[in-house]
Image (cartoon, rainbow, N blue to C red; front, top):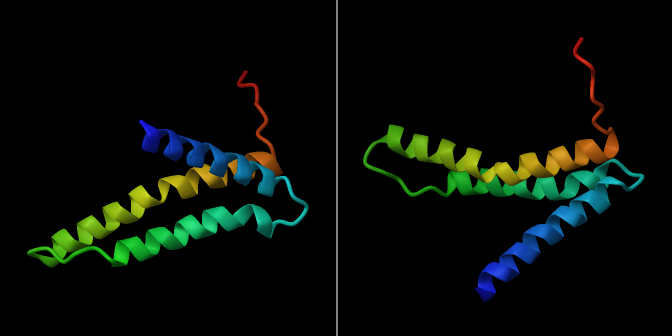
Length: 92
């Protein structure tokens, strides 16, 4: 229970930090956290243990890359919404 609470607070803190950095005047500050998570996904994809065949290793590497890019996508959406805002268009 205690570790779950710490993890939840860390995730919520990262989301608020991203929103704060994205509202800054400089463009690069809002891209710091997505960049860190993107580099982490690349490093994790290359650190995959080798399997019996190359195709299995390649598939696990690609899956690892996409799974580790979920936080990158979420943080980029927060950045885009803070910088540019999302407007609703009417579909008539």
